[in-house]
Amino acid sequence: MGSIYFVDSQAYTVIRKDNIDAVPVKILPTGHYDLEYRIVICTRENDVFVLRKNNKGDCHINSFYIREHPFNVIFCSSQFVFATRRRRLIFYSQKFRRQNSMQFDEDIVDLEHFYYEPKQYEGVLVALGNEINLYIDQLRVDTIRMDRPIEKFGRMGREEGVLVISTEGGGLCVKIFRRVATFDEGTRITTSGIQQRKSANISSIELPKRSRTFVDQSLRERENPKLLHQARERKILFLIFPDRFINEIGLWLNGILLKLLQRWKAGGGLGNCQQQLEGLNLCKFNMNCWAASAKDLAAGSDWTDVLSSITPHRLLEIENVERWLIFIFNEQEYSFSHRMIFIPRLFPNKQLKFYSDIYCLHPDKQHLIGEEETEIRIILMRKDRTKPVWSANFQMPASELLIE
Image (cartoon, rainbow, N blue to C red; front, side, top):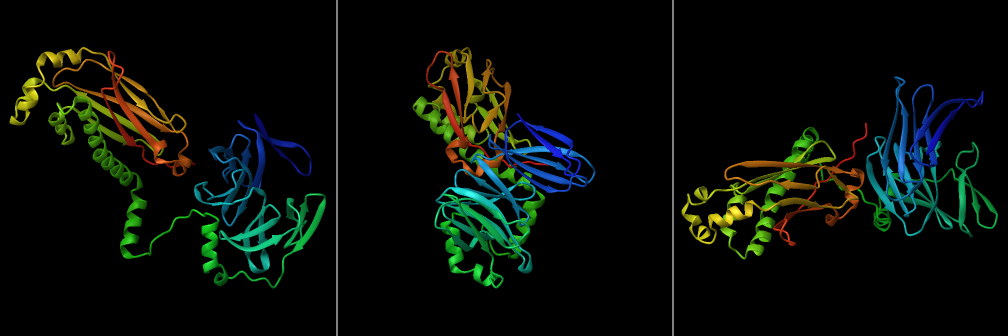
């Protein structure tokens, strides 16, 4: 759908052409073509493509998705800053991992990089309505106000610290940065700066003090992130899922099988359910089912009143009915390899295993969606009934973006 051409500025010839699956709206090139370069491309379909070439001469094309309609991008202080149509600035690292964001009350008109070499000031100029705000370290340090709404602004040629501003109605203005202006650390880290962060809705991570315990825990999490994440999510699933299963099935049977299902919570013989992570955005769901014989149920004295309510003839009648295991989920966030699993006839003391791979479609936006969108519901349906036999819910773990 879109093409990127590399043109020699002296010979005016096309030296390279790359195709992407979207329509470009903004291009940000960095680096040198003969050595190594990186080109960030914002597209109309909300995808961001990254064309890169390393020092070995290898060329790669990667992409990630931003839901908030990016239309402009700049590179500032080792960060990529994206301006979106939803009045938000999003900051990404050089590895394109989202760090924080800023929300505004007005539409973002234009975005420009600010750098003043004599005092090493570097920040972001954001045009909102009839004013231009200068942000350094996500703090507003200066504001340029105009009489009319701003249409476009930018650096005036090679002049340092000079902006040319175009307003509605054909107005043209030139602003010069004062040489005596000071933006030191003392003026930035103040109470007003903290209020600016709250008013601009800057979502950043607040780290605790670096105590000895905090340093040890940070090193442990950095060395074993996957194992810690798997252990935490597995424990949460084993704690929540059995309780919900017992409540749902207990209401359906009016308490007849309540004592029998208590054994499943302790690792007993009705079934087992576990969650296994495969990579950063793949989750595997395993379901183990087996039937318990009447001999095994009668082995303990605690099952006497349960056996009086369930006869062997009733157990055989249930096993002959066709059953399906169905997953209900948000199709815009996840994808299942097996959405419906057919459960064959169950035999006593015979274990059957079923699995389904769960793929996260947008791992880079997991922190923006609510808990109801990450909830997965499992229901067991019988062929001769319109209502489910039992159902259970669990929350999917957070997925992380993987960009090479």
